[in-house]
Amino acid sequence: VEARAEGDVLVRRVQYSGGSQVHDFELHSAAAPIKSLPRQVLLTVHHDAHGDRARAMIEEERTFDLTTYQDPRNTVVHLRIEGVDDVLVYRYAP
Image (cartoon, rainbow, N blue to C red; front, side, top):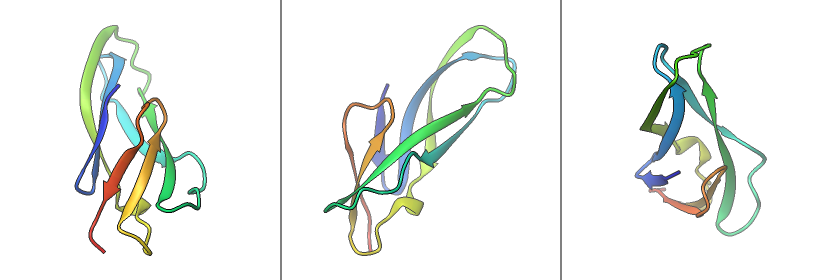
């Protein structure tokens, strides 16, 4: 499973079975930010299949806004995303 930060967007590769309904994905905080320098944010991607029972295996990239997770006292945050081994570095303008 892949993920990367591009500007203010998280690009996350998702894989799921379905094909007959639109699937929604949302990015959520898994816990309060870890107070460190730089701040670390624990994130998880929630998947809503809307009852889709189709069996096609779908793999695609989804994007999520990261601006909510910015630290106002810094220009970098480390992102720890459930299911992603690497810590992603999210850099942004003050």
